[in-house]
Amino acid sequence: MSMCDKFENWNRFTEANKLDALQEAAARMADDYDVPWPEVKSGVPDFPETPEDDSQKAGAYDKDSNTIYINENLVNDPDPQKAIDEIGHEFAHELYNNDWYDEDNPQGSSEEFADAYKDDFADEINDKCGPKPPQSPGTSSDDDQGDDDVDEEEDGPGDDPNKPKEESKPGDWNLPAGDDADV
Image 1 (cartoon, rainbow, N blue to C red):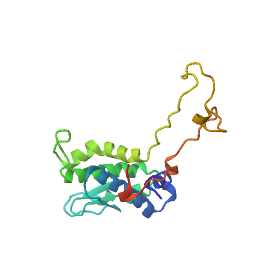
Image 2 (cartoon, one colour):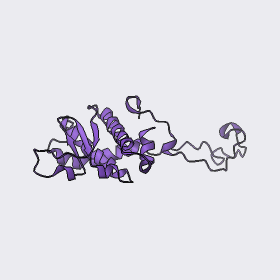
Image 3 (spheres, one colour):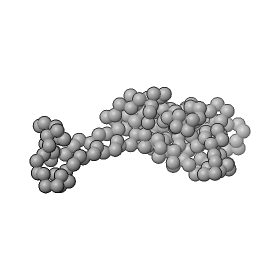
Image 4 (tube, one colour):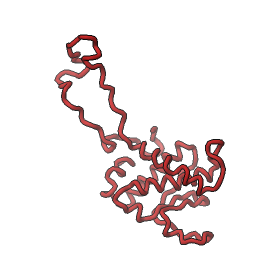
């Protein structure tokens, strides 16, 4: 089952399935930006080198192990968007850690970078599961300059050109998973 299917049916899946979807999202992003795949885990450990209790945070990125931690409350939330948003934020930390900055993305603090780009990365994840572009409607009878005949080859024999088309949903698509993804 694809990442998009799991996001679409989030509330019906186990924590392990949800983590698989978040792992796939992070892996696809890593492929897009040519950085190593981070591991995604549920639960945020309390890192001894920080003064605050990290286990209460929404997420964390450990650059030493290239691991994204997502708070289990976000993973178990009935809406996946909070977890997707946090993956975007933590993935930005990974990019920063991999020196992914230039004149458009200047070096600064990792947290400033993640805050500035988290929405962009979450949007990219959402776009991977967004609706397919609509099919070209073809030529309408108004565009064929007075020719009122309906060309059967355009609509297909037996198709009613006035009948609304069924809309495709992300869960209907058969997207490749992991390394095979060409999104």
